[in-house]
Length: 249
Image 1 (cartoon, rainbow, N blue to C red):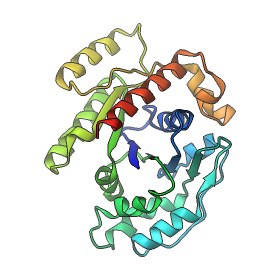
Image 2 (image 1 turned 90 degrees about the vertical axis):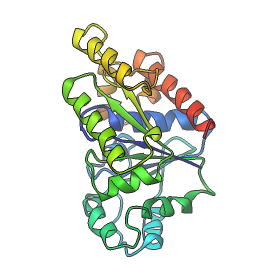
Image 3 (image 1 turned 180 degrees about the horizontal axis):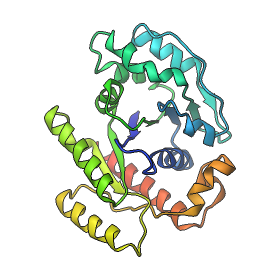
Image 4 (image 1 turned 120 degrees about the vertical axis):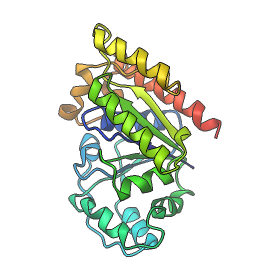
């Protein structure tokens, strides 16, 4: 079982759209996939027409695993299950703070799902918290969408700096360019600068697309209703690139 996270300090960069479409693409590729929505906003579950998670008490890793397991929902796409979010997830940090080995509890919890899934994909809230640190230590791959703008560049550099300061393995960070406008001069300049400074950027870029914005109205991943669009093809290409990365772990 491999664990992938869709994460960014900055909101509005296409993180949740990535999680929904990558989960769909992984499922299409034949991988039993569990998509966990850790963001209290619950957008991923909304895209898949799944209701909010029921509240549960967390005292330790075992009760956390039991609570998450009780909230597993089948999606409309066989082979892809969802654990939806709940506004109560905003208290995750408080709950984790009271546990022993508080920065490593999530990995222990996710091991409980190993017999049932090939891939676990997590959509994470846009901040650095104790929950985020658990995500960093639990993940095999962290996908970081970077819009080629100055603010997005700044938050990506903050993330890489945090990994250095906390002695976390920077090699699990896999940034890629998101919401790219090919005719935008600033986008081109920032992409060139960042790929020179950080050679680890994935080759696939996700273009800005009105079709992606329609996911909220259609309440399904882009890949479920738009096979031929540039964005859909980009998400599939990104999935293929990630699967190659996972095969090398």
